Image 1 (spheres, rainbow, N blue to C red):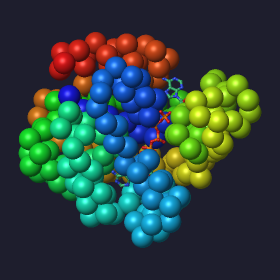
Image 2 (cartoon, protein in one colour):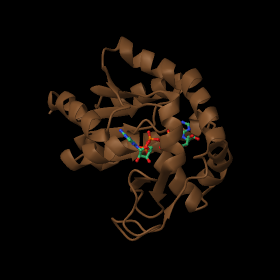
Image 3 (cartoon, rainbow, N blue to C red):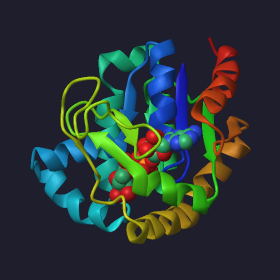
Image 4 (cartoon, helix red, strand yellow):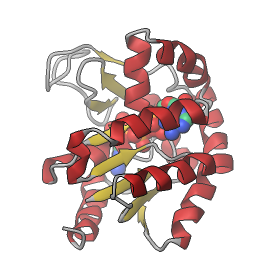
Length: 216
Ligand code: AP5
């Protein structure tokens, strides 16, 4: 199954991806997570990406395209992929189409999550993540059992540096200007399915699951 998941910051891409992975054996490739790992490990790629990410800006296309091209050629992608947060620009969309053809895995479904800005502000400022396994929490809606400690792995639960209202505005601008045209690009290929993601995640996932059933 070859899937992309798209939507603005806080739409629930990570949350819905976690649920999809419990149902299907495909790798979850989140460019945001890959970049944050590079920043944590202080790699040359991480050093280049850090400033852009903390400001809420997009990291340059050539950096991202090379990173994803390499990842999609790993053996586990022969089963398919769940790509989260990529492509986010038309340049990335064109590069992705070429890579997907090269590995013989064209995209079958683009899950587009749709949510209003006001809802996103609450989700983003309330979000906490495990610094070790990436599990997602929300204060006060989904708190870990012990404050600051991940239920899944015992790792430290922290707030992302870009999860402020200011940075969210920049990320939304980037989304409107660069990523919405990517959804239009995939609309023309007839592969986009749009979901109202302002609803509780169980409801959103229920609809996503029914849609994905046709690609099994
Ligand atoms: P990335 O990590 O991809 O961040 P993002 O797109 O801003 O998305 P988020 O991770 O913030 O949101 P999400 O939709 O996954 O929401 P979540 O499920 O956690 O990218 C970060 C940065 O990396 C970018 O700004 C950029 O600099 C760089 N980057 C990454 N990819 C790039 C690319 N391709 N090109 C260039 N640069 C790139 O949910 C949020 C919160 O809401 C959680 O607390 C959750 O519990 C809660 N929640 C979720 N769903 C629901 C629901 N249905 N009801 C109630 N609460 C919910």
